[in-house]
Image (tube, rainbow, N blue to C red; front, side, top):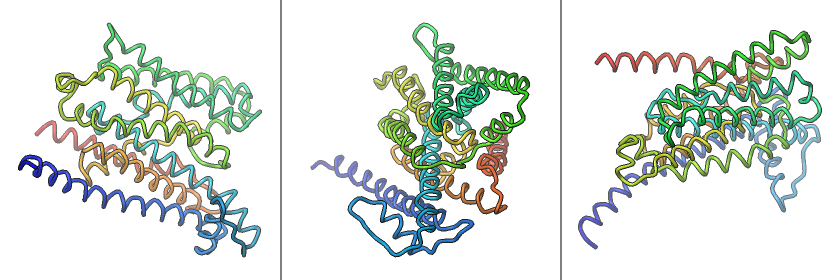
Length: 357
């Protein structure tokens, strides 16, 4: 083996070992947060009992020895909600990391491209027409359709002569997002039913209320498929982040195809997430930025680490929403905004300070 090959292998091993340590730590953190959130609530369930009840959900495992009410609380109410929080937090975080790499901007967020506004408009249409009350999956379906349709519209507007400049796409997304919010305000102003307005505002504030196994099963497919697809483009994101579009194209990358794929996958993940929770702001902004500061900008590590950290963050945020003012419940979107707004202002201030030198 040549000296160059040995040096390259040793350098790769030095990078892999710290990355493995961080990923392992984040996996343990996610498991711990899931167990804690499942155990803590209005009715506390002992840790050993929670573990036994969770293990009992696995195939070929048949355990007994608990109160039936404890089984209902854990397996029917808390566990699906906590697992859905972990899935959605991970999806929003990995989408944010991918978009920040694509736009080469640490302040990029899935909501910036109008996706959240489109999802909200779709959900409000289903509620105002009454269609959403016929089946629990109709509202998420409309929200997902609104999110995905918005991204396709933005992509169509921003594409000229077969090219889709990232800056143009970003600005188009902001404009379309503002238009969607205006349409949303118009619809709200025309509604006379206080109950419907309350339901809409409740959903727009974001939360995981009454979410069960059926919601988890439906969200699992698009979020996992989209997240795995984003991992496939980790090396391309490294090139785009370091060399920009022109540099990546000079190295042989089909930039247009990669951009299109990343936008579709990010929209798939975020659309599915927002469809089941309402508007959950700042997860896609905060988590990737913090993870990048800790483990570095390599997207081969950053993307999976963001998914794990985002899952832990939203599980903990949902736990806080449930217990902070018990027996009442805070809105999950309120919790993430209380954390996210100061962080966003910090990034804005830091960007202005760096620009001034």
